[in-house]
Image 1 (cartoon, rainbow, N blue to C red):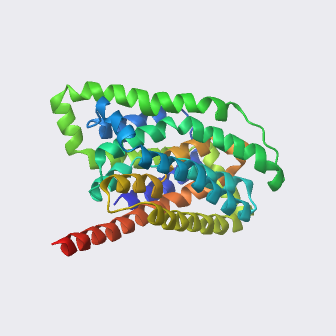
Image 2 (cartoon, helix red, strand yellow):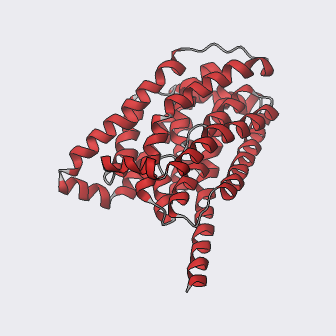
Length: 320
């Protein structure tokens, strides 16, 4: 259902933008994503849960090293092989944005530690500013390799502040207010899946209907080989990420399973927002890895979830 909505949102968004000149980007879309996708996941977050970062500090540190050191190196190597600045930048952006709007769904499905999962979600959102700094550094040191010029505009330096306000501070404050309005909180919790599906559809429709996104048609017409290169690069990236995560996390632990899901999933909606905002810097092809990430990550995550549930069931039967 969710995957079908994603494809529909992409198709309708590109079609609308193509025939109606597209939308102009507004940061209000980040606020909409924060309220509809992130805010409902914060109901169970308590300030005392922050102490879990100390209790499970070894897991957190391992996750940070994997998500902000190992995965960017993997993405960098694959990106260099593509020989395209935009594709490499899009792949690198995916590598430095951990978790995402659906990560809590997969954590719950895996019977992992949801409290730690929530805290890790907040930590990764706070690290968005660091992620943008890493992307900026990527642009500086790889542009010569690709034979491109890198002129950093206000998008890289100022976007982080807006992300923190719109995706962390406001959703958290709103969640504290909603908690005290019992009927509203109950309604949101009961309809969470519908709200999530509708929100994702609208966000994807809007982002693919942006006037900047219409440049994808030019890629299809003039450089169609970039589509295949990008697809292969994204598939390879996710495959390696899964193998690395499977090796480095102990998925028999509920806490490590939570960290595992914050590694195998990327914040693709935020990546799409940032890439749409940044194609004037890195090129239109930056959108391609993000677009394919939508097509790959959701069915990929569903398959991993099935494998993980089967392994957990086997462990339970063995213990009995």
